[in-house]
Length: 123
Image 1 (spheres, rainbow, N blue to C red):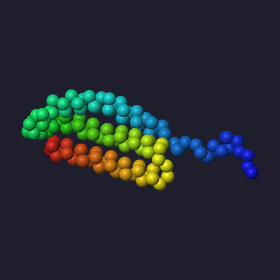
Image 2: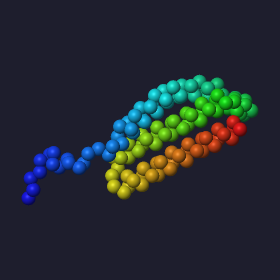
Image 3: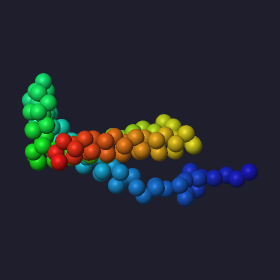
Image 4: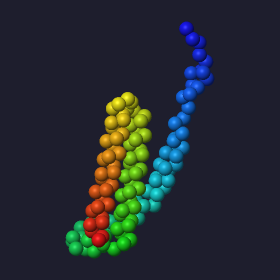
């Protein structure tokens, strides 16, 4: 029987070397969303209830289209990173890997769908 100290058990089980980068990516996207979400709401809010032509004309201009596109990209990247952390913390093994892959595919699909809709309106 081997008697191992706590230090000996922990040797070789260090960090994966990506935690800090992931932490900062989440913080940066959080701060970006603090700015983008209110701008998006104040830009999108007046268009609620407007006729279709007015909405198309509004989002056909560069500022609203770029703002909506930035909001979509940053929101879905933040969503992807956040849900990945949740899955890593609470689901283990093969099911965790499958869920992470599915969530990443879903995030990118939703992001591309939103960007396509904005491009179709703006162009």
